Image (cartoon, rainbow, N blue to C red; front, top):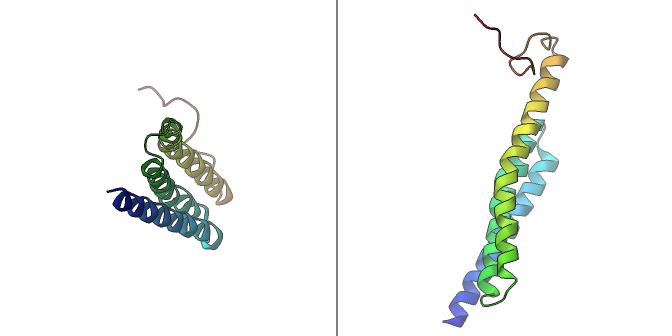
Length: 114
């Protein structure tokens, strides 16, 4: 039983590391901000969760498991917020560069009342 769990932990850690590596390559190689943002959030978060799951399986019975669970939850909660903020800034920069930044969908002003 122990060896099956160890194999599962090793496969999970290796798969997570592979996903994190592809995310890093995507950040370096993709041409625009939105593509890089996708590479920085989707495979990186899944890779980190797989690495943490493998570590939890490997460290079963240890008190440090709860710290790994907290790291995973914090990452799952903050990654979408960061991606949304980066996407919003990239959208604003692109609109202002194209000369369309005068009236935009993402202005901080409140919508007009009718």
